[in-house]
Image 1 (cartoon, rainbow, N blue to C red):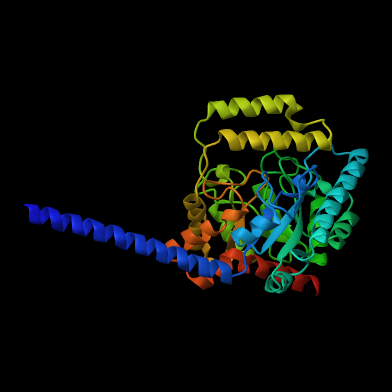
Image 2 (image 1 turned 60 degrees about the vertical axis):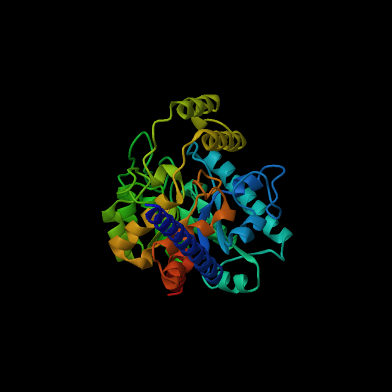
Length: 402
């Protein structure tokens, strides 16, 4: 009996040691791959923090999800910094104010990049991040979140392109002059793209700007695919089959995205990765903030930014988060559905993004660890982490040159 006990204990110890060795091997392999491939995040809202006093992109901050030191720590080579414009009234006087605000955010991004020339460089083409990464610096792309920044003035698109914008998310939480949003409580306005929206897509194709289909309604999505001459990108969306949300793409949309040659960048935001569990305390706190800021309507841009900051900080404090496992489940789903060439990562950091063990950019390697654990090869991880998004960007550039 004693002999069996000794043998049993020995087997347990051996098994534990074997599991430990396997995990160490996974961690080491993930580290090698993560350091070797180009890593790109296609969406963050960190510029909102750049507009506030005390936040410095070049130092490690106690708040926020992204800064240059943490990008280096997490092994993130390139980031798309979004010029986010919250939806407001749609008239000429407000559009002029929004245009001014958009330019202010562009200036804040450029000033932050110019302040640290040894750490970061503005990226303008699909080739740039490879060159910038090889020089030991981080690549900073710029995108625009919400075509409301255009108002109804087509000329603003080229102006923003010249300032570095390389994609525009056509809408945000509500309909605008371009298209219907997936989340407007008043429902559709155009049942897809407006006539002006069709002109916007054509102008973006001409210039070589990626069309971002995140946030837009299903009908708008299909309208974009009908008229766009170039592949499109969903910079921060996930899979509706795994998490029911109008912000996510269903399987038919994902198949259509493949036919278009585009890419879906999985959003690292809990509500888009798994169905939220009932959380009455969080609901109560968020309702208080919405009431305080008039549901973010009819207030100044400064008040809206302050309110959004309070909203996300409160959500972070009381929320139950999804996990890295959940995030890679969405990557798996896309790969199983349409193959490895049409999926990537768009965190939405500083705009609600962040999950357990991936709350800021310093923890990005945890995604690579989970992909290695599931058997993804170096070549596959290279495509997911940046290759697919840069392939789409290169094709958009090529079509613009025709």
